[in-house]
Length: 187
Image (cartoon, rainbow, N blue to C red; front, side, top):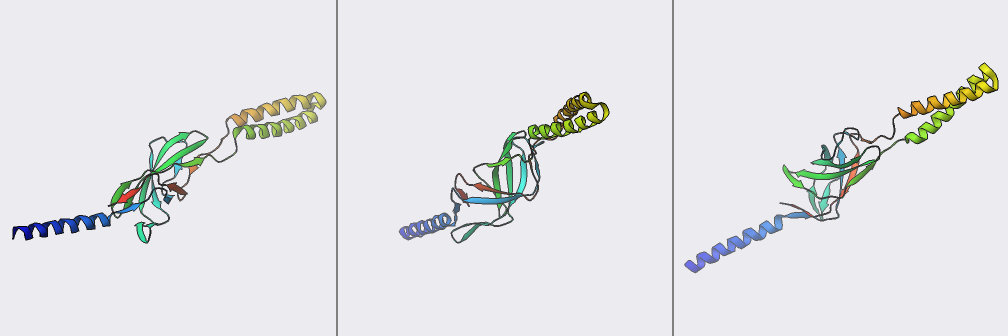
């Protein structure tokens, strides 16, 4: 009797732990996860450690099993911001069926968009210099043209100094792709 009871308990434990091991679905390293931002990320105000909401844009499957459904909530975290240059963002975690899972991903690098201040300053200086030369020529002949060109170029350089440079913004609904650096067991 005692032997049969021990055998039954051992069988139950083996079945229980065997089924539990089979229930764990693991997303392998290297899997690409595509998200869509919910919150806009402004490069002017973003700081390292700032977190933003996003959602899974493409469902993630492991074999034939759905691991992360489309629309699952996730969190993005700013890792580094280089003003006017770029920003590194990581997928911090994902929420699957009400449970939050931490992730380790490669960073999504976001480059600033726009024209550099140097190019704008040159264009503005040349354009305003030409306008100044034209006005100076009409008003005072050759010497007026030279003075007008210098004044116009100076005004162009001063106005360029206050102009916007490259912008570093991720509007809401921006798609980002992250690659898992480590497996994520979903248990």
